[in-house]
Length: 149
Length: 410
Image 1 (tube, rainbow over the protein chains, first blue to last red):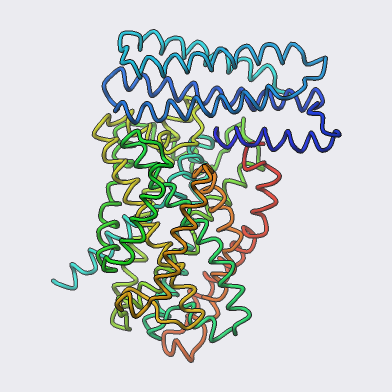
Image 2: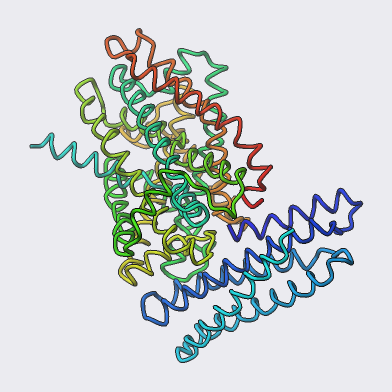
C-alpha cells in the first residue's frame, strides 16, 4: 500500500539509525531493498495517476475526485522519495542512489505537472501527459527490477 | 405478507450493512496485490461470522438479553472486564476508521480536504445516534449500502476471463512477486475484517432493541444465512474488480479513490457517483453501529440503562459514552493520521481480539440455563470449535506477521 509504504521507510530508517549509532547508513543490500520499495511506491502512484488522467480525458470521472487522487498520489510519492533521500548510501550503491533519485525526481515533477494541468483545465495536454506517465512508469518498473537485491 | 416484507427488509439491510471501511480497503488492497488468490479467506470469514452471529442472535431470542450482558453474569466481572477492554479498544479503533472513511468519501465527492469533514462527520454521527430511531438508522444505511452492488456490476461489465479468475481463486495461487509472509499477513487481515467483533456486538444488542423472542428466530436466521453471505459477495466483487483493473496496472491500493478506480474504468461517472454513495452509506452506517456498540458494551457491563428503545434522557450515560467516543474519534483523526492506516490497524487488531469475543459466545450458547431447548447442537458446536481454533491461530499470528512483514510491505 503506497501511503503505508511511505510511512514504513521512515520507521525502517529509525530502526537502522538506532542500530547504527544514529547514522542512517544501511548496508548495500538494505539500501537496494529500500530503493526497490520506494520505486514500487512510485510505480503504483504513477500508474494511478495515468488511470485517473485517462478517465478524466475521456470524460469518465469528475474533476474533484480526480484532483483528490492526484493530490494523494503526489503526497505519497513525495513522502517516499523524501524518506529514501534521507538515507546515506553506502559507496558501492552510488549508481543505485543516483539512478533512483533522478527517476524519483522525474516522477515527482511529472505528477506535479499533471496536477497543474488538471487544475488549469488544460485538457489538450492530457493525452501527451498520459504518454509521459506511461514512459516514466515503464522506466520506474525496469529500475525497480534491476535494483532488487 | 407483512412477515415476508420484514424478512426481505432484514436480509437487504444485512447485505447492505455488511461492508465497512475495513472490508472496502482490505479487499481492494488484497485484490490489487494478490488477485483473487485470497478469496478463500473471505469465504471462511463469512461462514465464521454466520456461525457466531446466529449463536448470539439465538442467545438474545431465548434470554431477551444481549450476549455480553450474560457473559459478565456467567463468567464473572474479571473475565467480563477483560472482554470489555479488549473489545472496546478494537471497536473504538474501528469507530475512528469508519469516521475517517466517511470523511474520505465526502472528500472524494467534493474535493474538500478530508480533515475538514472529520468534525462534521463525528458531530453528524452523534446527532443521528442521539435523535434517530434504531430501525431508521439500520434500514436507511443498510438499503443505501446496497449501492455497493455497483462493484459486482463493474466486474461483469469489465468482462474478465472468468475461467482464469476461478483457477486463481480455487488454487489460491500467490503472485510470484509477493512473499508468503505477506500473503498470510493479508489472510489474517481479511479474516479480521470479515469477523470484526463489533458486528456480533451490534447484532446481539440490536436484537434486544428490536425485541427479539423465540418467534424471531426464523427472521434472524434468514438475515444471517442469506444476508451475510450475499453481503460477503460484495467483498468478493471489490477484490474482483481490483484484480482485473489495478493488479495488471501495478496500482497498490492506499486511498478510497483507488478503491473506486475500477468502477470508474468500467462504468464512468455514473459508476463513481453510485460507488461514492455506497462508500458513504457503508462507512456512515458502520460508524453508527460501532458508536452504538461502544455505548452498548459499557452500558451492559456496568448495568446502566442502555439502548435506543428508551428515550435519551433515560439512558443518559449510554449516550454520554457515544458522545465521548465521537469526540475521541474526531480528535484522533485531527492529528492528521491517515484513516487508511487506522483501518489497517483496526482489522489486524480485530484479528488479535477475536477470541475475546467469540469464546464467550460459544460458552453462553452452551448454557442450558439461558438457552433451554435452543442450546447449541452438534453442528453448531463442531463449527464453533473449528472456528475457535482458526480464530486463536489468527489472533496469535496477527501481530508477529504485522511486525515481520512491516504491515505487508516486506
